[in-house]
Length: 248
Image (tube, rainbow, N blue to C red; front, side, top):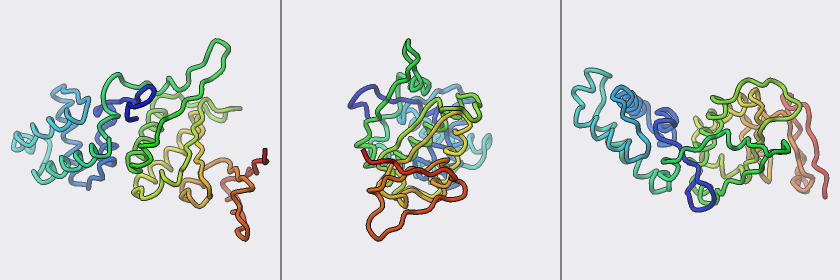
């Protein structure tokens, strides 16, 4: 994600979209509306926004042309534009500018197979990403959204086409805004029909929000994760098939 190791994961501001970028920045409804207008104006003028700098210039143009923009697209206040600019600075301070650029990452590359029909294992170098939980959660949402957009419906397959394991999941959900958790929960449910499996790995089942864990088709609980005096959480009705991983 930060381009320091391996192949960088890149996308464009335009492809991420106004809604997901607004959630990444933590904008309120008025600011999110201003962001949507900025994207619509860029599309109408065929101004492709690749990086956060491109977005910043588009916001500056919208501020200078605010009277015309308000007549054409709706009311946009200078305060909303200024708030977006401040949030962009905060995002860049967390390294949020690194995911935007070229060459764009094709999500289907994760599903590459060799000549023998074997899949590949991809590792995301995310030590710095874990230090920015909001950026991590938004990245996960973008990743699952891209898969949902590009993959055809697959139904119930004997085995999934692609499986994600997100380690240290408690860091992913710690201090993550409720609306982001709700979006992740919805996408985890939807991508299952695309043949994609999602596993959240943590030291305790309580690290995973119940709205997310109850959508999992299975729960694997290692015996060592059940501490003395703490009974194991019984599986919910929506997860009828639970299993204990044997010690090796």
